[in-house]
Amino acid sequence: MPWETIVKSPRDWAVAPNLRDYQQARRAFSWEDARRDLDGLPGGRGLNIAHEAVDRHASGPRANHLALRWLGKDGDTRDFTYRDLHALSNRFANVLHTLGVSKGDRVYVLAGRIPELYIAALGAWKLRAVFCPLFSAFGPEPIRARLAIGRAKLLLTTQSLYERKIKALRPALPFLEHILLAGDDHQPTSVPDTADYHRLMENAATSYAIQPTAPEDPALLHFTSGTTGTPKGAVHVHGAVIAHHITGKLALDFHPEDIFWCTADPGWVTGTSYGIIAPLTSAITSVIDEGDFDAERWYSILQSQKVTVWYSAPTAIRMLMKTGAAIARQYDLRSLRFLASVGEPLNPEAVVWSKEALGLPFHDNWWQTETGGIMIANFAAMDIRPGSMGRPLPGIDAAIVRRTDVGAVEEIREPGVQGELALRPGWPSMFRAYWDEPERYQKCFAGGFYLTGDLAKRDTDGYFWFIGRKDDVIKTSGHLIGPFEVESVLLEHQAVAESGVIGKPDPVAFEVVKAFVVLHEGYEPTEALQRELLGFARSRLGAAVAPKEIAFLAALPRTRSGKIMRRLLKARELGLPEGDISTLEAG
Ligand code: AMP
Image (cartoon, rainbow, N blue to C red; front, side):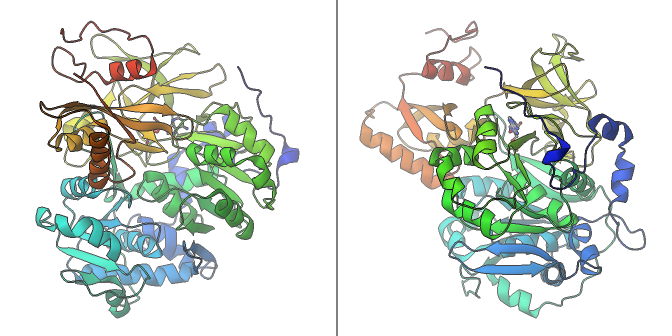
């Protein structure tokens, strides 16, 4: 059923949105102007994310403004002003320097949302190292693969994550020169073969001069997944900060007195671009919650911290819906001004529900690891069409395209026709490479477009509507999972001869990972083996990636060339028509 448009009127504005006239803003926009909103390193020595995020504010009127308020999962609170972040990130840059880390080296962090992670990211950018965050719910295998692909030089993690996930991997990581541990209670640790973060920080100087940084110098490595092959390391550069900053202003509507809460983990791109960089470049206050999702905890944070702008994800919104509007109404949420969501399709029901339960609709927006920042959005002043991702940002040219038989790409101009969502390259936060995989990178571009792998359509007014993925990657709780990574680990179990992994639709998580396995001769498809396989996968892959369901099959459908037909597995699972099976292997 078509959902009614949510009409915006200036009467609803608590403060005037930054972007009021969409067409005019698009016409007037240039990336050169956007760049002028930033300072650049003193003396024209380039553009560095950490300078824009912290140092320029620490030497100005915002020095004592609250930059980060960290809420520990057990109830502690720690506040960091811009001046504090300046000194702490300087210390971390000095720590790195003393350890022999230099420009271009990869500095990884495997941690939950703890203050040390944020300080390490900023310090790494100051040194011009490449910061790579890893999701703490990854198991040893996804961690090993990502450390190896980017050839990590240094890893900062916590004592408990080290003991559980890294220690046994060490022989497989010969390139990793340093492991720094932060204590689980943020106190010093003494663990053999590691260095203590806290002591190193204590002994480091608080001044550090950022060396010249070219806008094209690599700054970030963010892993994402494809249907096949190893995880892909999308490389982003310091110049991306121009896009982080302007999208914070235009798509998230940052105003100077905002208190912003991005619920995403920095292990995923949203938690870095908008959980670290964009709010800091705008010199606003960010709330960081270490705790996991809990509806009452979240509402009480919104209330007690007086959050004004909230950026979350559809799975979380659906979980809030499940707990009911009555709970939301027990809290005073009047400080909220703007709600945005990203990462997976936001159902129209959720937009309408939030308007009723929270008093404001969620504004869906779309982007990917590769795009580095928000590309398509429902802006604060724009009427919302529930179910639509919105319209492209000023400076972003989005199109719907089709690939022709001869491998070319042509734009579909008629509205309402489904095709692949494509973007004209040239925005500052576009990924510059997949780490060490130039061919895989090149394959993403054709006919002057970056091809996103998403299927979508555009309506007559230029709103984009998401349809699905072109490939077999799985979106679960907002996280992209590559089926191949899961299949490979299952094959390591002695009982498994073949495995095929799909995303099974789920009312809350959008999809859950489901695996089909074929057993070697001599193994029985018992419930006990099913449980054993689930446990095996979980211990290797971690809760974020492991399958939630495993089923046994006598054989997997494969093409004649041997590729697993995951689409067919999915169609059969859902009782849908099997589609074109002309390439299905006989027998
Ligand atoms: P990631 O690179 O992990 O951020 O995942 C990017 C993918 O998430 C996109 O290619 C889409 O398939 C999906 N996605 C992101 N935002 C949206 C949205 N607003 N609506 C539907 N799908 C989305």
